[in-house]
Image 1: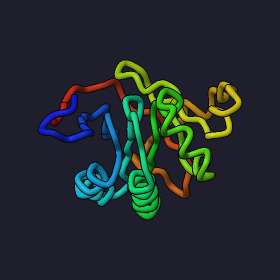
Image 2: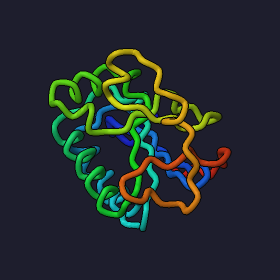
Image 3: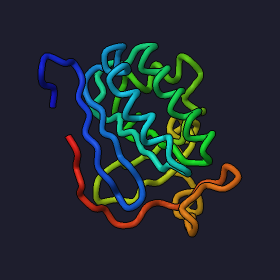
Image 4: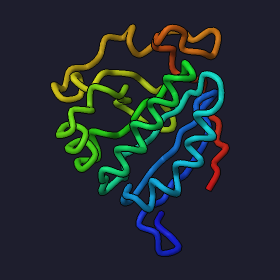
Length: 164
């Protein structure tokens, strides 16, 4: 939903211990400027677990890509986990990440639906259409933290705590 004359919108909710931020519209300098403060809050915690749902993004520019890279760096610095969901459903995001060579730099969720577990795969799997191995999508997360860059498991069942 785009409102107040903005060309973008965001919606945030929790799925277990994972924060899901759904982005829509144009992720440009205006959106990146407005979203960076909130993403910094989320990624400032110890071991943040964040999914950015890109399904409804219609446009992304260098400022949007910079915001994604900044978020990824902050999550890695806190031993957390960042996944991009719906990249395959957003041609503009997929194209720009491919053109910049950044697609393989992000963990990608194949199915960001609210009633599913967030599976992981690499950018190469999305490009080739290969389904990731089951163990890549179902690892058990016991301590709430991605230790040593490992890939922790998907979150618990969804809880709806939407924030506008």
